[in-house]
Length: 547
Ligand code: KIV
Ligand code: ZN
View: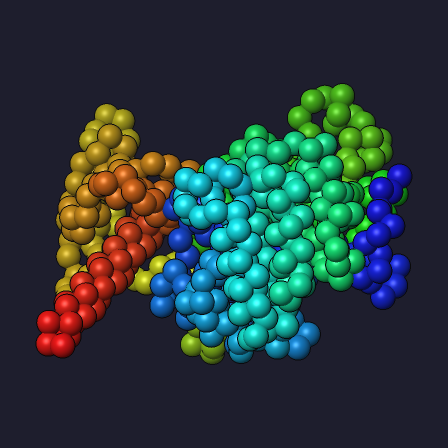
């Protein structure tokens, strides 16, 4: 059954286009707002490259006005990923001239740039946060959408906290946005408050009652505070929305955003129910999920739909029996459809440099000769210890080597003694900004001893919030992946780290060091920004005294 409203079809050229749901990925913007998910610009670029490979229609690459680093990261993505046949590159801006200028500066190099501007429309937000009246909000929206449209033809407008806004006021606001040049209207459930039926009714009302509705694409943007983000987004799509704003693994503010993989696979697995499609290459889903998890340090729960490690595991005897007879008894989609085809042997100990380079290229890694050599050496070491080296192993090696944070401290040597009876002892040597330093430490276990030795060298107070280890592939010789999250002493920010190695103690050391490096780098740049702002204030004060 399809609930396509007849009045949205005018915007599309043909039926196929009318039934296409655009995938707007905001992993690098709303996703990066997850506690502890801060990414370096190299990591952002690599994720953007993978999102393009996945086939998303729009990448919301960041919030350029947030800081010069954010602006540069979006600009780099626009330059390198935003080609003619690549995705639209979008930058977020509050509804003010400064933000919109910054967004435009960042996305301008893309072949298909988009500015996404927003202003809150719920009574609560307007009265308590913005301290603006309804008429001031309407004026600002008209002016700022028009201002953005002066730079760029593709403009998205979002009434923030849309699902708690007065629906009739929303119609007024969205009419103004269309008249001012908006081409996509996004209705955010900013606080994850709505329900599927309510969101359906709201989307239908807005599409039916807003003059000019047929000229724009309607979009859903949901947060998962009540665990309803996917259901709500699908409901909005059934009501006529043709853009879904989503993140990989559902990462995002608080409980997160709608998970891209869930929307895509729901539409893919239930074609007769939805009669809608996306242009996503579903076989890239797992790989994208792993990359985002590794780079952000946000572990995917084992029972996560589509990409969790148990998503295709069958434990109950009855289920296993059914699976052996016919997989369709307990599987509604095949693991291969979402990219689980890779447990096959890829390369082994006798594979040469040529085969290795070819596989890396097939996996889409654009490595310089020098970097390829680095990974080749790691691959050979791994192949000596592990018979079958899979794609997942190779991805982990690349993530481990190149996509951590800036390396302020580097692991040089590590030695651990443990067992029973005895005192777990670790000796660690790190290369620091000035010299390399060795320290021993005793801990409650070997990992604790290693972390204590690292703490002794770096001396950066922090709290360990999460430590998780899992094997990349099956078997006793599998590489271990470790993810660590720490928070600063004030408990304000969290930082993730990732490490992969056949030795999980080494992987743990790398992950902890990664998180600490990220913390040092981010604290450093925040400190420099604060110093810069203080200097600007000082200069401004001196100038005004001189006048
Ligand atoms: O959740 C929200 O309201 C947002 C907007 C900026 C679209 O992320
Ligand atoms: Zn959001």
